Image 1 (cartoon, rainbow, N blue to C red):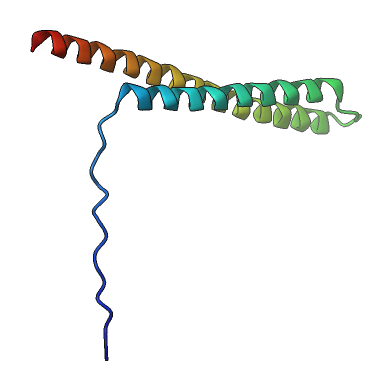
Image 2: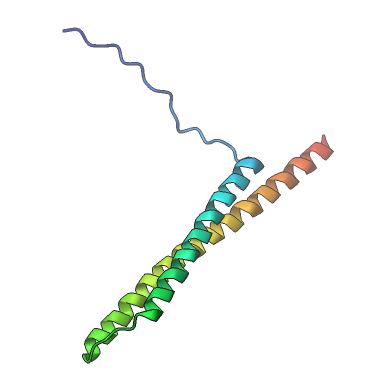
Length: 107
């Protein structure tokens, strides 16, 4: 029968070189996520602190405190990762600006 002619899409495996503007935009976004997750972590920790576990069973208390610790720890880990990414992107932006200035002086 008739087969429609399908044009292959442009290969998108090309890497786009980083620019200082893109690095700064990424750092702002990552810093925003880090701040949002930090605020969430504080809210979760405050909620857990104001609502203690009421039980006479020691196993319930141990499991409850472990789950609370894990929840706060996972959110703290996400906060730290986004914070480190923001710092790394800012450092990359500074490095790219310095490279552009030194190559402009050498030419």
